[in-house]
Length: 213
Image 1 (cartoon, rainbow, N blue to C red):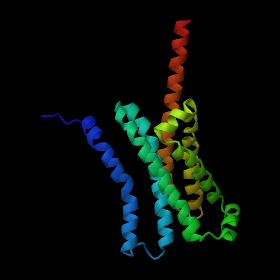
Image 2: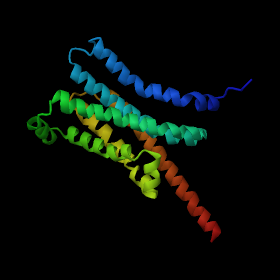
Image 3: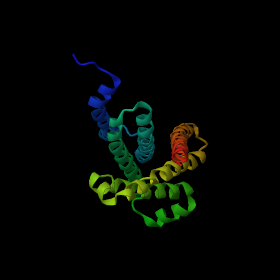
Image 4: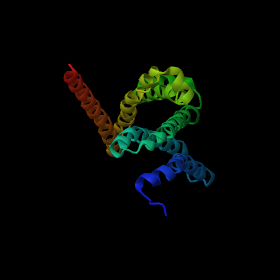
């Protein structure tokens, strides 16, 4: 009989579970739409829901590398692409809901919004930065870009700052920062871990060079 371990379970069932997790919020939204359960303000509900899930999957994407390093489960890296693309998909739905359903493509309202509401401008910049990451997420693009692929995908760290900032400014106007602080805390920890790991690796590299000399 095979011995079930956390590593073997995540290796066998983790990827399908990730795909189910990625699709669940969208399926839920569709179901709520068909059952007329999108609350009294469906546009606001869809906007809020898609935006929330975009930042949730951003957190999940950022968590992959630290979890892989801490667990030595290298197969976890295969989860990063579907999680990242799902983050982009919900960000796209979030943006389209605001653009099409909320403002009905009325640019006489849309353009002034960018000047009046800083959080909208910040959110748009974060979304635009996500586009090249989604477009270049394939193995083919990774090979074509070579070393530049890794440099390009470091934009995720800027997005990780802009996305919660967009959320923070929006919620600050309503004096409702509890949920935002949770996401800021999670992203802060994930970014801090990367800085720590980067500093540790550089220190080890310098010590190695000194030993060789």
